[in-house]
Image: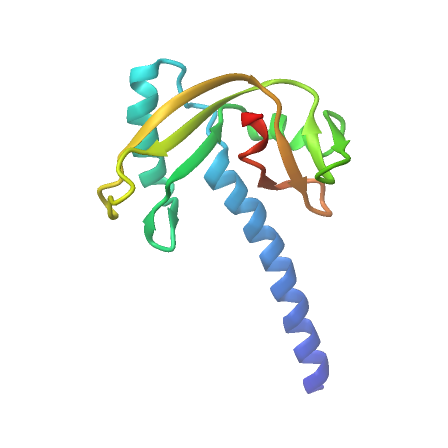
Length: 146
């Protein structure tokens, strides 16, 4: 009985970690309301990162990129709107997306005084890792810079 219970707990742990990764991806990278007005983008970076509690080990995150799109559009990359990238073994979007790249202004800043510069990036393809349920769980933030 103890072995069965242990196996069940291990399975639950893996199920929860998959869900947490998907939820983490959504929280860290999806925000369809990010605006394309540059002055507003800077203000949005500060407030959205703070509201979504996006930090690195309780410190200011140096860079975070938001995809200015509906989650459903990004999820399609894992099925009909993506192709396998042979180098990375991740899914590459067929369509272009608008991104907001939020960069920390002062690398020595400490939470809660994290201030960001927002940079609008248009017409960018995405590279995402998908889980077994065809949901995005990782965003390659370096791919769109190439």
